[in-house]
Length: 284
Image (tube, rainbow, N blue to C red; front, side, top):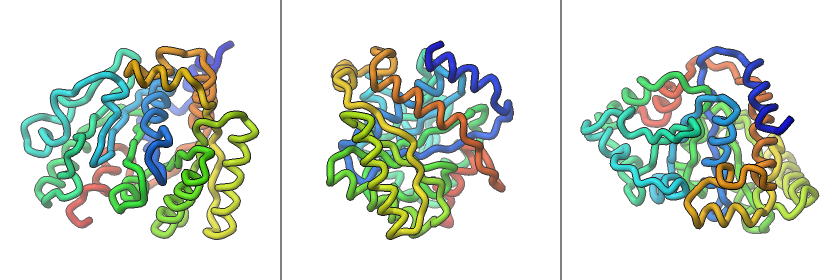
């Protein structure tokens, strides 16, 4: 039985409730493959039978749509200004992954008026029916990036074996736990040359986080350094779709299965609307 079939069986045993699990993917630096992982992880979860929404939350340089080879006619700007409903700007892929494209190069989301924040929150409160929402943040430790991690059920920090990436992964973990010390943190090592390298990099970040921050970071796994990933990026298609049997896709199936195995944390408010109310509320 292939991994995707196993994933589908797990979904069949899962809770049929409609509570949306919010997972934020972030990184301490750019260039680690976070957006590529976000898109392909979304496809892996959708293939497993989950209803998935991916929100491109990079407020300065949105690129999820570029990875998919699509040019959205509308984005959140049109929702904020009242020109479009949120449903009108959602990109729906044949594989079942829904996407809200960010406004590339447009920074107004970081400087919304109270009225505009209210409009955006109201729009997101109308969304329902999603099992999982993935948030693809920008890179770095800015308040905008950290802000998208705080209300999430889980935060996946993406790094690579490069020393600078490891240092910056620790940096974003530190920035998050200073504000939310009990945050559910996961680490995903991208572009590992071997399973041993992936394990060693994860252990290094996990150990220093435990030693200096007194925080538990869980090893979510690794993604092989796979030439098929760069090939798919050049073709503006997800590697999970173009090369479903490649090493990177197989690793991603394992990551997806681990996400589906984990119990959804209990919270007072649930769903996409509650998440964005915390992100964009006028009080912030």
